[in-house]
Length: 483
View 1 (cartoon, rainbow, N blue to C red):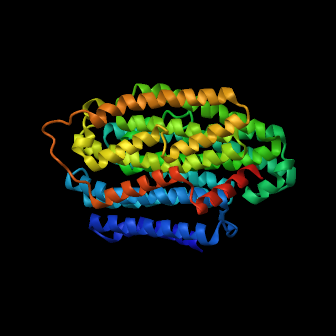
View 2: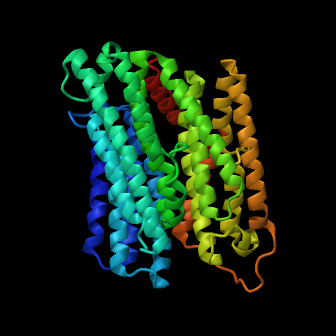
View 3: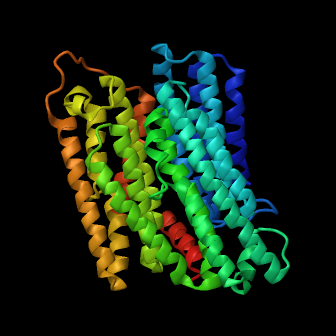
């Protein structure tokens, strides 16, 4: 029941902006809606757990519920940040009240489509919902209709459409394998899982490659990630956070669902090795590009490629530790990167540029944002006591336990290179003297709330995983590993 309410609230939030003319009211309603959705998801997890199959259409097992929780947290933070951000855009004349209304409506269509990806039981319908996320978010990438924004939106649509077509081929092949092996005429998760052991291994192997490359394009895996830096840098800041922190993860979720079927049909090593290959490739490619970035939002975009690579390395290592670490990293990266995008957006507004060579002395110019940007820099670099350190350590321990020393060595090498690049980029941004003409500024209360919400998760999860979340993560690992 609570899951239905979450979906209903999102749908209502997409309609309500058209019933009011004041953008301030739109922002407040948006926050109230996503705060309610977050509380409902939390109550569902803590009091009722994962209900499993809800009806013939929705399924909320532990894996679904974990991703729903991650999406709800980032949605709430993005709703909080949006209030001050959109108010600033309206006051600066960059958008009118009618365009603010369109923003809030598209925002909620986008968030609703991401919830649906993780909740529909039919894997064919899941493909439709993944495509919905592309259509809804493409308008938000090109929202300001500048030349660069429109180019980024088209690049996003074209490359991801190619990927989604490849994923469709994979879905059709899985359907063919299921139909010929068991005579089943649907793609329901439970039916596929029940008959996975009898599927033709050759067809399943081919189908999974299409799924991995197709959905992997949307997830930002290298070398299919080329749409990502442009889209993330041109989108409005709250949308950049949603793209990086939850949109990529919903596509990774789609891959994980098919990976479970593949593991049952052909054994664990086939899909795991492919995940490890693409994960390590993403780490290596992102490390090279992060070194030479000048634009702060593009830098964060390449960090998304890095962290989706870390998640797939964890999935590829597998076992209880590797899989737990990968899912733990899904959440930790989501809250950390959202905070970093919000901080970068606020800094970009203050300095009038995203060029890091022109941004100096953020801590002096914007103490509140600067402190959180500093914490985010440490967290993104994988330093303790922040949560990303814990999930990376968990993945690394899983590799060592399995005796994968080459994987462990490459993993640590790429992380060290990326940390060095972060130090190079952010030392001047944070600590050098601010421009003399720059006056003090204050962030809106809702923006501060978004920073504190994300920073709280970032620090608390570095100190320990709450019992309810540890239980949910272990149950989600069980869905993926079957143990």
